[in-house]
Image (cartoon, rainbow, N blue to C red; front, side):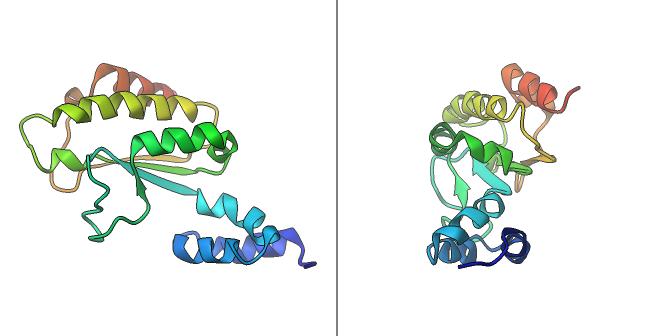
Length: 154
């Protein structure tokens, strides 16, 4: 296959929002796989839920558990160079408006570790999302807010 890499890169760039299509294309040829990696990891979303359920789509989808993302980044540290958007879904805040579930505090520590892994990356956005509840800055653990502030270079 003798397509110039920049042409493949441009074509696959149109599929950034369609990870299923990118994954299927990556299986077609090794050259495709190499060109697709940066687009596949452009936007990574992970959640604080015990479940793998994605409330927005009603399916598992591409929302990762923090522990899985830590393992992925440990095995393939170069991925951080491809991520421009890092989205954190605080799903369990929707279920308990008073205080987060106990395991969410543990997830905060994992989130802090993940953010540290991105400290020298080219992140353009960090999105903090809670679908049905407003999270105040004071509800987040200090270790997480410190890492977020450092990631934002505040």
